[in-house]
Length: 162
Image (cartoon, rainbow, N blue to C red; front, side):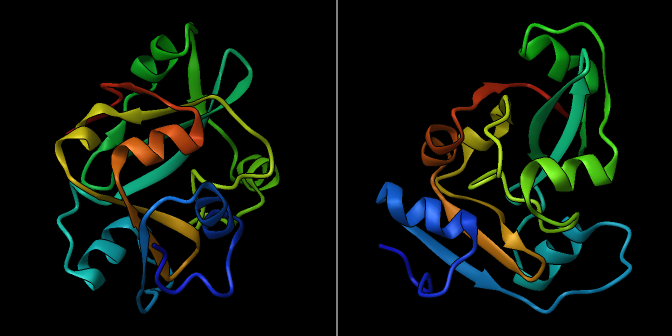
């Protein structure tokens, strides 16, 4: 079961309530970095293809969550297609923070303030476990991809690009 979930973030509380197996991985935050995700992967010694970032986009004006490996980028056209939309653009950071309840660099796909349409890149299925933000900078949660999909109500699709 959960290791280190005693004082939680909304993400760890959601995972604990769901009764899934997960592990928390704290790390030293590198401020003002170009990529919080790549810095987290390096700090934890995890392949960047296995650590996923949570990005928010507006698809036809509606906030949508894309979860992709930190090693790549979100394909906005693919995200729009995955949720039956036509046009997508990255959401403003302030809108992402308001909708999720998290700060940029620590946005988790789990335990968000509002349940938003979510798509996880299908590459997650290639790993026994993946890492996503646990809801604050300096903390990642490791869980099975199937649990990530189930807890977020996500679809799986090829939304990342190299």
